Amino acid sequence: MTGDWRGVLYPAELPTFHRVPAPVRVASLVRWFWIPEWNITAGRVSRQELIAFPACNLAVEPELVGLAGPTTRRSFRDLSGRGWAVGALLRPAAVAWFTAEPTHLCDRYEILDLPQLHAVVAAAMTSDEADDERRTRAVEGFADWLAATVPAPDTDGVLANAMAELIDGDQSVLQVTDAAARLGVSVRTLQRLARRHVGVSPLAMIRRRRLQEAAERLRGDPTTDIAAVAADLGYSDHAHLAGDFRTVLGFTPSSYRGSSLGGGPAAKPLDGGGSVAGWTPR
Image (tube, rainbow, N blue to C red; front, side, top):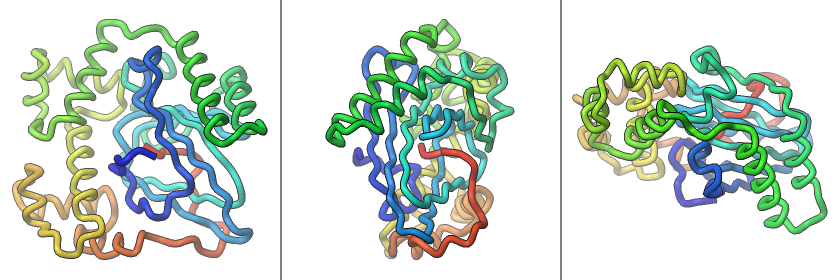
């Protein structure tokens, strides 16, 4: 696992988890690959809670391949038994190949018929090789399939990638007009690119980055000044940050700051309720 925990609400509760940089041949299509593996005590469940990146994920599981759309709120996956997944955090340029309407995938997980991709990844993950070798072969096979299947980005795809990279990586981008000016295009162009290649608006992408950063700063430190965090991230005041927390995450900054100290929700008895039918771990 890399040192970047942004997007993960309770890192201490993650199963074995690895983020692997995308091989050069698919770097324009994938931001990184991610591999969780777990073995939960029988009769118990471990809930993994996320504030996901505004993007789509292509995930291979033991029985299926799924495409997870961008989320509009806190997402989770309840893990039980033993399992694994290998996923790719898709860059915007790749999304248009998988769906013509990414907005329709918001908060959804759609099963795809991609038997060749499933076969190569599953064969690697269930082999008798050492753990690192299994994961490496799974990522390489996944990347080979993408490189052979998904076309190289066109002009719009390249610009959509640049938009996402700018919004996610530059804390000074607080408004859509900021991003448009940096990229030398109109706000309408960015809105069109986001609708076609991401599934949420440029403003939603900016808000998600700010909320992820706020959660990362608040996590684990009971002395963190919430008002100072709000000011640093461009919120007009503490109340606006608190409003975003409640709307997207369902709790306040102060309650998260306290609960995250203990690592979040621990594994609990499996009661058959409250699960999500897909992966959104970005």
